[in-house]
Amino acid sequence: MEPILNINTINNELFPDKVNTLLIQIIQSITKVHSIYLIGMQKESKSSFYLFNPTLQKESSTVYTYKLTLLVISEECIAQPKEFMSEVFSKMNESVRIDSIHYTINDVKYRLNHGDNFLSRILKPENEIYTAESLLSCRYFYHPKMYAMIKKEWEFRMNRAYYFKDKVDVCDDIYDESAKMLLISQSLQQACAGLLNVCWEYKPSYYDLSHLLNLCDNFCSSPKIVLPKASFRSKRVFHALYHAQYNVNFISVDDVSIKDSNYAQRLCRSFLRKAANEGKKKLQELESLYREFKVQ
Image 1 (tube, one colour):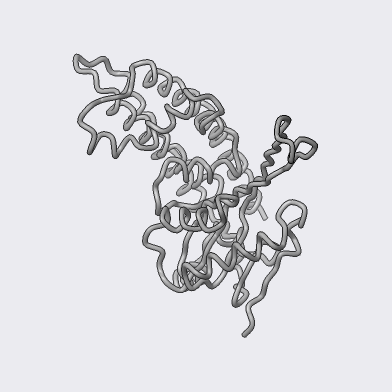
Image 2 (cartoon, rainbow, N blue to C red):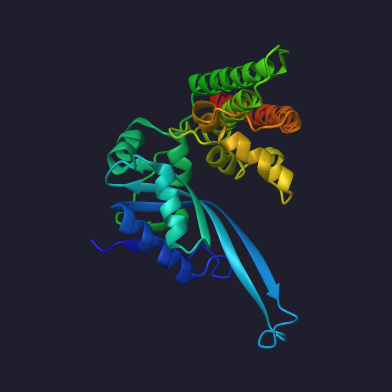
C-alpha cells in the first residue's frame, strides 16, 4: 500500500511543502515510521540586513525556523527520544526543532482497542502528516472513574511538585546551589506531568525539563515563565536547571551562584501558581463535561 501523505491542512505559508517533505524523509531515514501526526507548530522569523557589506547593502534576508510537536508512530521502540530529536534538528540544518511523542504501532493498536483519550484526540485525518495506513481512532471515553483518576493524578503530581519546592525553602547550614537547582527542576517536571495528564490525558514516558515545558507550551502559558528569555541571565539559569541532574552527579565544584538559585526559586513559585490555576480550570471543565455526559 502506498503511504498517504496529508499536508492539506497545513498552510503552505506556515510550513512549506518542501520543508515538510524533507522532514518526513529525515524521520524515515532514522526509524521505520508508520505514521506522523502534527500536534502543534510555531513559526519564527529572523531578518538580516548588512549596511556595510557592498554586496548585501541593499538586500535583506529572512530565515524561518519552525518548532513542531509531533506524534511519531514507528515499527520499533525509540529508546533514546533525545537523540532522535537532536538528530532530526541537526539533519534539518537547525531550521526545524521537534518535540516528539513516541509510540510503536503495536502499542497504539493495543491502546485503541482498550480506549485512550489522548490518542482519540490526535489520530484524526486532519492531523496526519504522513501515514502508511490510516488508523481508526477510538471515541472519547467518558466515565466517572476516568475523571476521578485524572483528578487523583493531578493532585498527586502537584503535591509532589510542592514537596520539592518546599525542600528548597528549608534553611540549611550547608549551601549547595546545584542541589537546589535539582529540586527546583524536579518540582517543575512534576507540575508539567500533572498539566499533561489534565489537559491531554497523556502520561509522559520520557522526562526532560525542556521537552516537558515545550509540550505544555501547546496548551497553556505557564511554561513561558520558565523557558529561557533573550537575556543571558535567563539562559544561564535555565541551563543550570536543565543540567541539574548531571551537575549534581558529576560536577564536584558548585558553580551556581546564590543569586541564580534564588532567581530560579522565584520562577518556580510563579510557575507553580500559574500551573495550579490552569490545571484547576481544566479540571472544572472536565467535571462539567463528565457531569453532562452522565446526565445524558
